[in-house]
Image 1 (cartoon, rainbow, N blue to C red):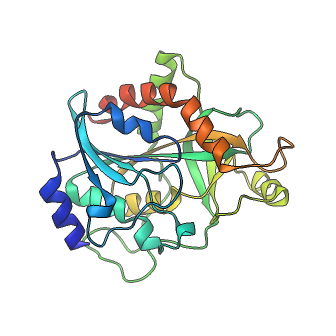
Image 2 (cartoon, rainbow, N blue to C red):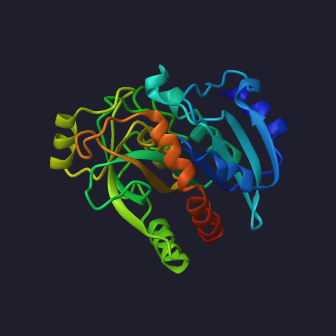
Image 3 (cartoon, one colour):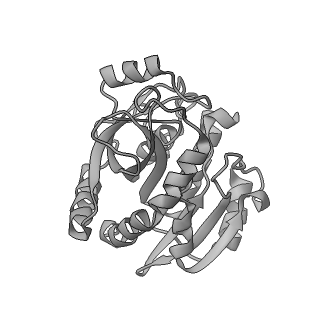
Length: 268
């Protein structure tokens, strides 16, 4: 990754303290940054490219209420053919740039019947069913331990701040457990029944490798899902990616308002 980091450092406009990864249809947040400066993924050597629809493919540096940020407008998924290590390249880069707090967002299918389409959910824990872990292989002890603890993978303190902030703003923010599947096919109704049985409230195809890597690096983590559709077999309708993007656009203003208010409170 050294060539990629050298390029990013030459073109970065600040030294970020907070990093944000934007999910499908949620890229609009990057437009809210002050003094924004974008680096296209295509210009970064040895850097994965976002191929999923709804992921712009650029790093955006800027500030928000005085907090220096770097935003990944587009992430890397295992279903795109990337290795687990490539899928977390952005997290590793953010850490190397000085980020100590990471915020992950994603589009997710709702399993919990209490979550309507468009609901925002703070992830409290996850179930990794992707069959992969970005830490598999030789460990660099300078970056983190061989066997990192995942008891508080989603930092409880940050989640409490997000929940309090949402209440102040009059925004409903749920809490839930996220199950990560490999994709790119959506789950079958039988798989959703299985996920519900083992305790999942949400299902998606991202985030978990990034959170594992963030914990290994010692980053504080907040993750928020947008329920863009009800999971297979729960609504009687078939699932399509356009619905995912449409719901992301529908909740954009609410989501952006929450992030703009909560980020300065996390950087303390």
